[in-house]
Image (cartoon, rainbow, N blue to C red; front, top):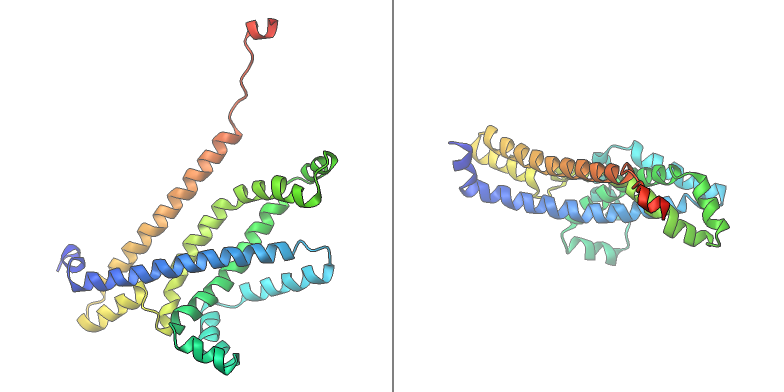
Length: 241
């Protein structure tokens, strides 16, 4: 059986269902992890030393624990800590997907917060001082001067995080989320043939990562061209005028 014949049949439909779940999980976790990363970054800008240190330790702790441990904890451990009503509400829904989304979002959010923090620290202090001297408040300086520049700097790392996050969704198969690799393993159990299902899943991941890589490179080229665009030199007639 060729790859085209494999994908055009019933097994291709299973892989398509798995791809849809993978994209859904990637989209939800990417949005949630970005919000978490922004919140953690803003808290780490607090003037209180103890708050900055506490959040910094929390981020380091989250990043130090393997993602698989996060997923297992949020699926087997965290629901048992909830009140009975909330736990029953959770189990009445797609608890596998929800727990996987929470675990991956928190894990990726810790890494995104470090990317955002690095972007903020790369902005020269003189820009803040110049903005304040022009009458901007501290909040206005951060919102209109610092944050837009930091965001442009962190777009390529964020696209890299999106690529990593998409690949990390495959760990959700360990708690029964029917994503792409889960479906590939299911097809293998049916056909006893590992090559076609896993080759197809690999091809899908390669295409997704290639698209994100191209987007990152295109953005980097565009940003570089804007920064290096030479200024227009006045002509002799304009100078004499």
